[in-house]
Length: 100
Image (cartoon, rainbow, N blue to C red; front, side, top):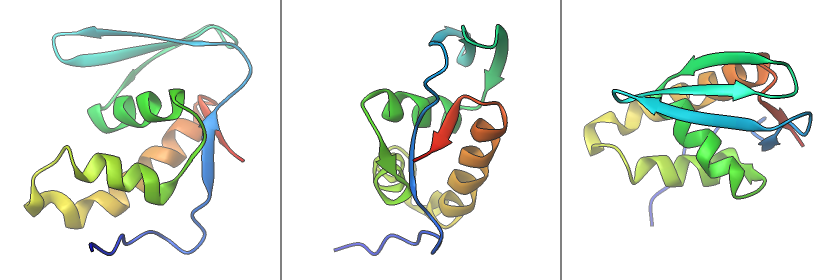
């Protein structure tokens, strides 16, 4: 069984309840429109996948890591923990997600 290297303070995350998130993909890039704030954001492929996962319901960082690890090459796994944490903070700062 694979050990999932998550940060000790890692908690659960959910889509922010104020408004809805509408997404569209253009040439492999994802745009997210937040109806509550009226803002549009270009997001990375990792951020787009995190948002897709959280649309299914609240998830913790370990669950998100597991899902994302299945989508990337094994040699990129060491970068995933930091990338995921940074992505969660970025999406939180955009008010698209929030910790539970």
